[in-house]
Length: 369
Ligand SMILES: Nc1ncnc2c1ncn2[C@@H]1O[C@H](COP(=O)(O)OP(=O)(O)OP(=O)(O)O)[C@@H](O)[C@H]1O
Ligand code: SF4
Ligand SMILES: [Mg+2]
Image (tube, rainbow, N blue to C red):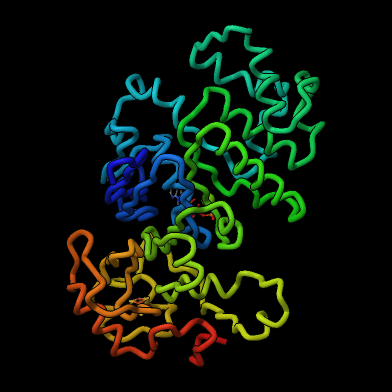
């Protein structure tokens, strides 16, 4: 993609598990295990998956808070994968992260002015009108009273604190913001306000977002495209309309079936898919398709051959031998080196129990209830 601001290729983070005095490595937590995606300038990519699937680790890798084990991260034309702290410093202004918990991510002993002004000091940035004025302008931009410059975080509500966190990321006019569960610690009534604020800021400041959430409902309105992660891998990536209206991966279907529907009639028509068991440990993930231990469509091949992430001509990507809503086999192309051919995979999909267009409501299987 030519106008990509961020390109992540086969990104990996394996946290070593060590034992004994000599710290001998006895295993590794494969938190992120071969993730690839692009983020185009000005778009919002939603990154969704259950707890522990590697969303935050992906965010921390992109912001280079941690060192990747493998793969490549290209930001704004620069390969930052293993860039030294010295060389990456100027680029840090351009990539910022909003953290999940507005309570613990703000230092309680610092005033709002000191918190939002910190990036100016750390980066040694002088502003024409002085740091105080610049910070007050940012406070106003995020809907906070500039007069509250000298107040402390505990004097604010949860939603206001998240606004302070957002203000801090905006100080140095970043290009890319990784928002890690920006609203999940907030009351439902406040969530929409903060999501709307992020949208307004994107339009006003020409921002590009990666928004992380464990729930597909949170990213629905803000995302242009959505990537679904399971146990360190992306299993489906598509534009918002395709993903919500014609999801192809069984896991996406299960996540979607848990999204509340306000309309009682439509709610009645839909069946909730309850996934059995917990997410397996990333220390020892299931072989081949990692979802096969919980998937109601799994067949023998699923535990033997890893389904490659295939891209349809529409750009919809899915890693499944038996995808739902599968189009005609002529509409696919393979991305990367796959273990099975596109045609083979989709033929296998046709042989499965899902007819094209069958949604989650159509399944009467052991694990769907
Ligand atoms: N520093 C670390 N050392 C060892 N394992 C880690 C470390 N950080 C994360 N992990 C493990 O990596 C996996 C992915 O963690 P991560 O925090 O990225 O998940 P997540 O998708 O953000 O989950 P959540 O929705 O709970 O925030 C988890 O199993 C986690 O325990
Ligand atoms: S490859 Fe098999 S186990 Fe994996 S999601 Fe598809 S049908 Fe389920
Ligand atoms: Mg997380």
